[in-house]
Length: 150
Image (cartoon, rainbow, N blue to C red; front, side, top):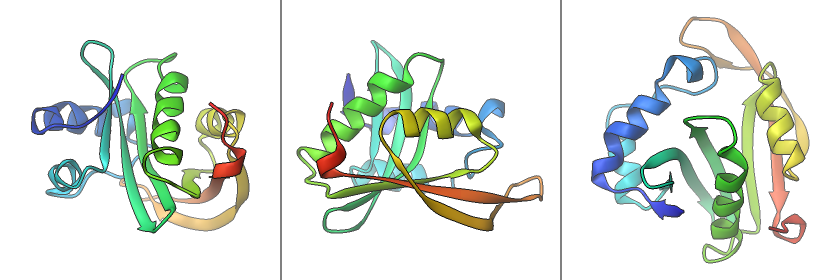
C-alpha cells in the first residue's frame, strides 16, 4: 500500500537510503532532507505491513515532477510500488510529466524504468560525483501523462 511517510518512518528511510547496496546509486541525504520531505508530503512509503520502500519526489513546477530517489528492501517490490507512485502522480497530483535520472552504469535501474514505460531523453556526461570520488554519466528518462497506463 502506498502512503505518505510519517515522522516515525525517518529512520527506515535513512537506513535504506544509505544502505551499502544503494551507495553507488543514491546521493546521501543532506541533513534535514528526510524530515523536510516528510513535512512537505514529498516522501512516499511502500507499506506491506511494514515499510518496504520509499520514493522521494520533487515538484519542479505545476504538472512537472521528478522521482528523485526510489528504493525497496528486496527485489520484486519495485514494480507494484512504482505503479502506485505513478498512479498517485498522474492521478491526484495531476502530473503532466514525471522525470528521473539514473547513472549510466546502473543497468538494472535503466532496464526497470524503461520496461515501465519511461522514455530515454539523453545523457549528461559526468554529471554526478559519487561519494567515493568518481564522476559518472547520468541518463535522463521521463514519462508523460498520456503514456501512463497502470
